[in-house]
Length: 301
Ligand SMILES: Nc1ncnc2c1ncn2[C@@H]1O[C@H](COP(=O)(O)OP(=O)(O)OP(=O)(O)O)[C@@H](O)[C@H]1O
Ligand SMILES: [Mg+2]
Image 1: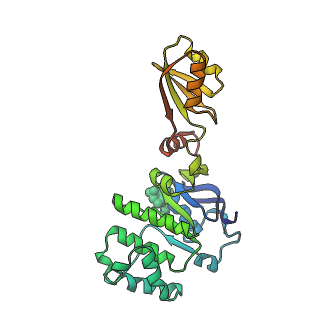
Image 2 (image 1 turned 60 degrees about the vertical axis):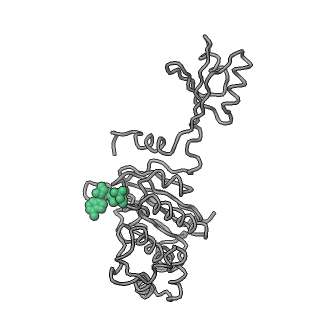
Image 3 (image 1 turned 135 degrees about the vertical axis):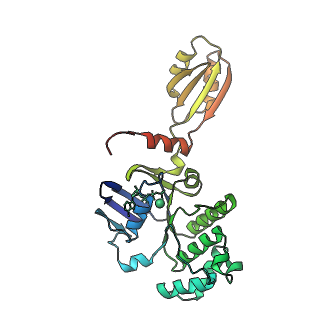
């Protein structure tokens, strides 16, 4: 698969603060790549550097396998923290200004407004827009050049649940139209619902990269309750769990790949044991995220 973005040992230091610290990662075409991290972990700084608005202290990055040029930049639509539009101009008028700057024909305006669902309000003034509409206008503005890549920094910040759901749907639609998306967020739920891949930053350092679909894999646990004197031993002998831990009246099995609660149930039954409680638990992104952030906490930065 084609690599869209390659980040190599990228760092940004502000005096003693390592906003981004030796970051290396790759984003492939079609990915919806989430950069997840708590406040101040370096998400915006990372996006700023790969957009060429913040100078890295060291390291570099490639867009489409090449050192960035003015032309590559045109192929990247971005929404950083504060969009700047003229409050007394309408949506269309604001986008015309963007078209002039980006040298895009006005004919694109109706298309992008329709795409973001703002066509009905296109002729009303920006200052009358709700936060969600303002955000949609930003996305429309970023779509004007029909870029291959979209960078979105906290796209649902400050929106109500319905606004959040609408923007998320819009992001997924944009991705389905063939664009690669890089999205910075501190919301686990957002990344889990929208992204295909995710990276976790902590104090500028990359803590984890992986597939959202893999979250929880290898971390399935099954709780078992049964009346049997040697339950611990029997469960350990099953070969279905890498760990069996006793907790009060139940045993918690960390399952080996490929085994389900059904297998445990059958195994117990074959051994003359009837389970009175069997509960499957998969780890959420939230748990995994907190564990990743807790890793080596307090160690050298
Ligand atoms: N211009 C600057 N001067 C000094 N320090 C800065 C500057 N910009 C960012 N920082 C620091 O760099 C670190 C990373 O900031 P950044 O804005 O990239 O984090 P973030 O992950 O986007 O946070 P948030 O979730 O709050 O948006 C923070 O400690 C921040 O205070
Ligand atoms: Mg930020």
